[in-house]
Amino acid sequence: MEISPLGQSFRGSYRKVASPIHTILVLAALGGWAFAHKISADHMSAGAHSNRIRSYLLILLFEWLLFALVMAGVWRSRTSVLIVLGDHWHSISQVLRDIGIALGFWIVAAGLLWLFGWLLRIHENGAAIAAMLPHGGVELACWIALSVTAGICEETIFRGYLQAQFMALTKSAPAGIILSAVIFGAAHAYQGFRMTILIALYGAMFGILAHWRGSVRPGMIAHAWQDSLNGVLATVMRH
Image (cartoon, rainbow, N blue to C red; front, side, top):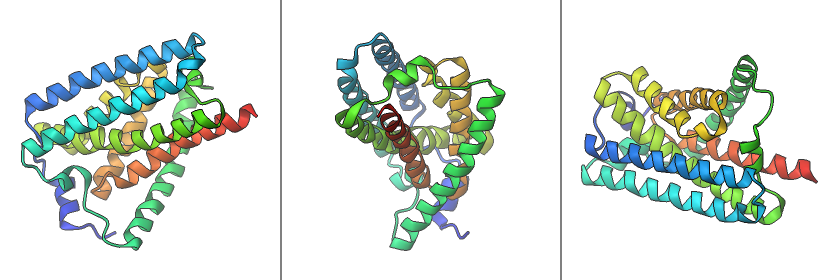
């Protein structure tokens, strides 16, 4: 597959996209993000069903604030946003190509996640995950909005920003992918130790996809689709 010069730069320039101090601030904010997720999961696991929509909206807001923090650091460093996100779409065929890549990635990743889950003896979602899934149409609509937000914001933060930053600091693509995947897993530690490992492996898959494609856009599509599908299936199965 032909990759644009900008995509080649995305994959191999090892250029810092922001200052190290800004990255420390982002990591600290991610710690707060993980803590907020933990509180929300605990409340919903305890049966606070009336707070589920509020929790969705608070998490959605926090993710966009993190996205803004990341973009502010990129702009302050006068780094092209395209280095973080990848080249723009210039035609419908490019959009369809990335949708096709996202679909292929999702199929392969789903198979690998099933295998890794089996090896880790993760047979079903834990209480923290099940309690967060939507009940009914209104909650499902909010869940899908949150899923799309997660696809855009988390792929930008973890694969577009942190992965590029760690590649630049270590001068190594594998190290950048692994470090960003570990932090991605740690940010979801509220789901339990084994799920944290599985999510870190999932993050590594997204990292490989972003590095190979030279863009986070296919990952955004696959991420948003996967999270949305979880909510849709949970809602359908309850009815």
